[in-house]
Image 1 (cartoon, rainbow, N blue to C red):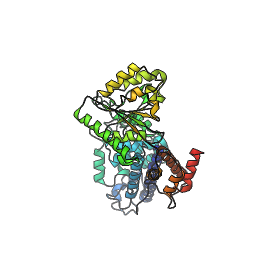
Image 2 (cartoon, rainbow, N blue to C red):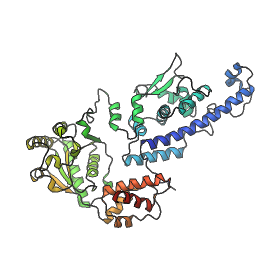
Image 3 (cartoon, helix red, strand yellow):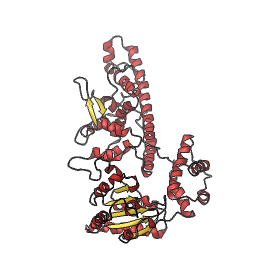
Image 4 (cartoon, rainbow, N blue to C red):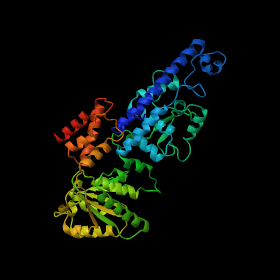
Length: 474
């Protein structure tokens, strides 16, 4: 029987889940080490006996060996399979909801193993609470009070995260080589005095600490860190007042996520195919489209689906959010080579009756876009808000209607896909009672999930949905 999984509310909700696992692992290790120390002290008569305990324990039978003493522990596991599967499931659901989780993003883009991901978690934990540093110190020295460092050693990480000698050898090898976390400057060795590599502490780079602890991680920070001088990330401009207006999105919206009439879906797919041919043939003509629809009808989502099908990042600019003095600079920055798939939200700001820019400057820019392979999408709530003279130069106009009852039912089901809901939930009745757009349905679904989570409820109920709608609609 499957388990309905819920997405993480944000990056900190994910970190709390991972830290709860680390807490269990450390508490088990501490308990077992205390037993080991107690057993050794029972037989040791001088300090030298304590130092040589790993030799004489083979002669004298000591019950309850240390947690890392056995070659293949029978009971202690780093992470239960069920937990790992559920965690990965929740990460995937969060990704579909475009909730950025920093550590899983690093694991994906750096192609990290489970050991490397957990190693980053261990080095990050003391940045959240020094209690982890005290636990590391006890496990490394057997002393309760931390006097040296809050950081874990290489030896402790290998003992905690690996189950046997083979795993330890392979995991230690991950700390060497050009693609290791050390060489990528994600981690660094720290040692107060000359010592072995095994006894060195591991510290997380400050830049990565800030990214991993952000409530809403900025993926541009991740991509900038991953970029090298020989492989510049052209889609990520320097952070200026102008380029901050430009959002770069790596969309994963598939066509089946669009709940639209078949004729409109066909229009969007045909447009995508035409642009794809232009990219393949390197044609000197670009496509333009005006997408019209009320707020929440799916204009941005349609643009994401097209960009995803083209396998190109989507450049999104909301013209209403641009400062008056920056309009000309933003226009110049939107180069068709750097941003081949561009969505201009609130297009009437530039192409309406009271344009923020001169007509000649816009005409020249539009001509440049139309003579390079790519796609320029104009987004507007109403058709008349874009001047007729500009509409005549745009290749196609696609109008997105508000969803009908059947479509609203599908949108409600889609919004709660993978979420445990009450058996009494009647999506058709909700769709009939509340005439909402797709965007409104999505927002209220997230509110309902948050309400259920705040009550520690196992399922989302009809009452939660109604409460979320009342909060938004009044």
